[in-house]
Image (tube, rainbow, N blue to C red; front, top):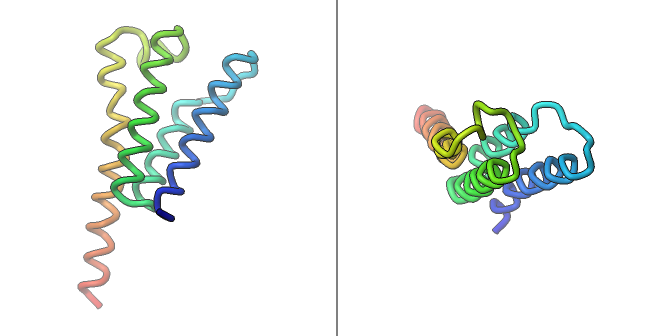
Length: 109
């Protein structure tokens, strides 16, 4: 349960970006901030946290497409949104990379 707390930074980042969009205040590079949160969730919180964070980020990208928010390279067409759903995979990749690195360090000792 504690590891699922690593989803919280992603949720807070998505909420901050959404509030800033609705109020007209600009957050610089909002999607990069969300990607960093997903990677942190995957590497620190484990596979489940990474996948949940990635799913939240993917849903946010789809929502951004629907409301017309975000860079055209990410939310310009439905195909780009589908490719932007790589957010979902980035949490899993971060978990797998961290797990492999930790395994190598513990088996070498």
